[in-house]
Image (tube, rainbow, N blue to C red):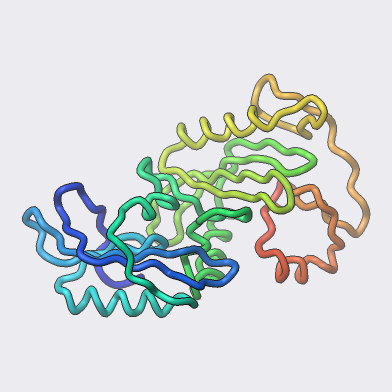
Length: 251
């Protein structure tokens, strides 16, 4: 949401009064949560927290309620009042500052919480990722892992995008506020997925098995998940299965 001031909720400085969860949502959505309450501890106003769009401060209850109605309208489905619980807000926006941007397999992500803005926001993040700098990279026959430094297209902060592709139906993107943690998670993913029977095509992580790259087929695209798709069918593939993770040859 574009109005209100972006804030971080501090323990003991707010009082949540109501919360809703999205029900009967579509196949590419998640059970989004919205929480509203008063700011305390000397800070006047009301807050609205949406699991996908973050927390904003508003001057009064009326402005907060207007924002809630607008946010609810971004989603298909039914909103249901639920008990106040902060835990759902940390599933995609974690306490260490990392965020689950996309999760192709079962699981919540910001992509699934953006509702009708999903494609627009993902396009912004995809372009920002393309314009970023790849810092670490590992490629395999069934996917790969990489760390890219990029600029968040919404708030301008520098973050570190970790791509994790373990097959055609298992693409996960998590970004971090710091490079050290992103690289630590990257190395853990590479080491945990390494195997002598299926060596990597290339990697900058010491000690993992590496083998030469298999030849490409003319007129075909080998996706990061390992599947081969005709170049002419890529548009239809995206319509059916969603975004295609960018491998080295897509950069």
